[in-house]
Image (spheres, rainbow, N blue to C red):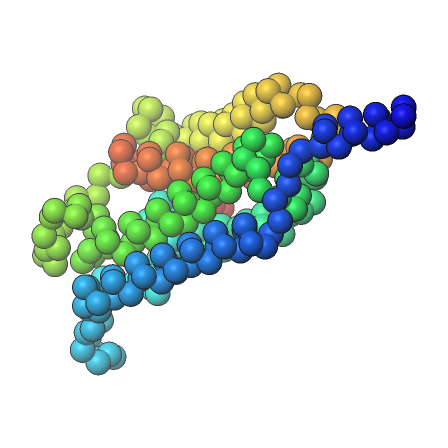
Amino acid sequence: MAQAAVAKKKVEGTQDKLHVWPYLVRLEFLCAILTIVALTVWSIVIDAPLEEAANPTKTPNPSKAPWYFLGLQDILVYFDPWFAGVVAPVLIIVGLMLIPYLDVNPKGNGYYTYHERKVAIWVYCFGFLVLWIALIIMGVFLRGPGWNLFMPWQYWDPHKVVALVNVDLPYAFGVRTYNGAMLFGGVVILGYFAVGTAIYFFMERKALKSVGFLRMFLKIELLLIMVGIVIKIVLRLGFNIKYVWVTPWFNI
């Protein structure tokens, strides 16, 4: 009798689970149908903008990469080519490869849960939607002739001339000497990573024991780089800041 009571309590204490079939498969099937219907209606209503055959003697204005590369092409506006074309793609690939090694939280494996994986879901949404999809949308719909930024209600004027008023961050703060600007920019960049790392370690000090110092440190630095890219884009679009750290070897 005692064993039966214990077994009954265990059964009552377990959480209800749903089978993949038919619950999950049915939902995914319905989502797939809605997506196909939406794409079909979109393709019927909106004509594809077919252009004339490619002419090697006439370069289109602007020259755009395929849509899936426009995010990287748009990053070239805000960063040096070595960062936008080399460092950023490498960080994306390496960061995705490190996810299984950095995210060792066993909660949520094999089932969907937002309550137990809020940070992971928000970081993924930030990286995918803000740093990839948003830049692609900007490159497709807002970048016109001369790679100038046009709002949706503006006419794409091929003769538009934009004055180059971009300045480096040290110059905007009154630092005019070369060595002073290099020192000022280095302090800003290193201070950003130092302060951000310290704040994150303080906020997640309980998780440090289970995750480990190295994993926590790498996660923080990758997150700060993601946020730093957005900060740099805002500085360029809103305040015409070209570079933050200017040196003889590289510019950031």
